[in-house]
Image 1 (spheres, rainbow, N blue to C red):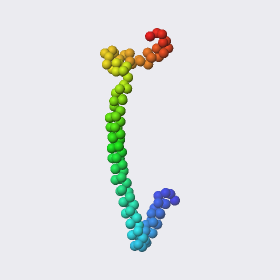
Image 2 (image 1 turned 180 degrees about the horizontal axis):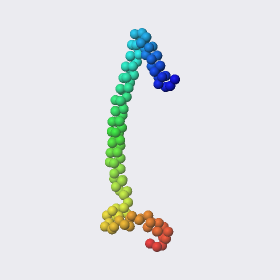
Image 3 (image 1 turned 180 degrees about the vertical axis):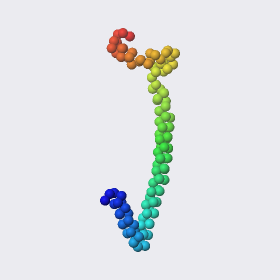
Image 4 (image 1 turned 120 degrees about the vertical axis):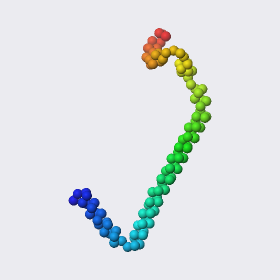
Length: 111
């Protein structure tokens, strides 16, 4: 017996047994089904509320960090970086900056 035959026999057996159920059992099954369906619908609303609350919390956190830490971030900016950005020099030197740093480390007296 393959899987399809097994499923077909199981379905027909269950259908026959379901047709022979009394009214009280059918009523309890229907009530259980309705309760299960209600449980499925509720979490979707709760999930949407959690997603909204999470997004709001993230926005408040980022805003707070930016407002209270923006001054520290601006003050801690390295002056050398500001000079590089403000200079009119070409950026060729800075493209190979790792090489020049390595050269300076290899021969400290060359500078």
